[in-house]
Length: 163
Image (tube, rainbow, N blue to C red; front, side):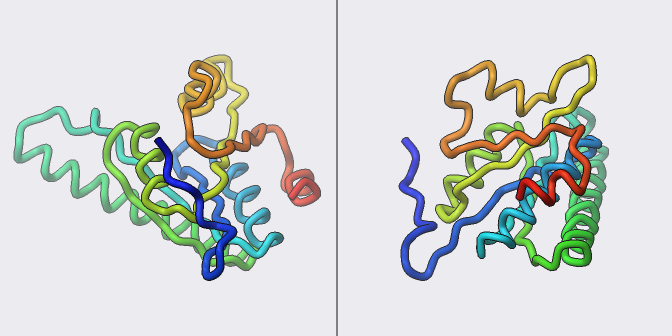
């Protein structure tokens, strides 16, 4: 069961959640989410999920790999947030999680009841649109809030016009 969203109550504002990763289409989702948030007076949350499969080694090596993954996540999020601040003029909240992406995104949504819309980008590679977008197609209610899927073929100008 999903907790009721609070984004329309006094003292709250609707937030858009974008997942940051190393896919090329990620930029499309972040831009769209940032513009929608700014244009609607809402907030922006950027989430980076570190996959648990990255750490299947000996304990000492695992700790080093976790630290390196955390540094990479922090750096990637800081760079993305700064790029959006410069390009669009919006500050963002950031979250770093470790685990399965779909489960961690569910947790972020559940913990921040102002998050009302998840923005994902669909890749156009022959492998498919990407694991998160595929999870929506594979299960009717993969996420407990509306999901906007942005095609990776949209240009900045097209995204600006749509948001």
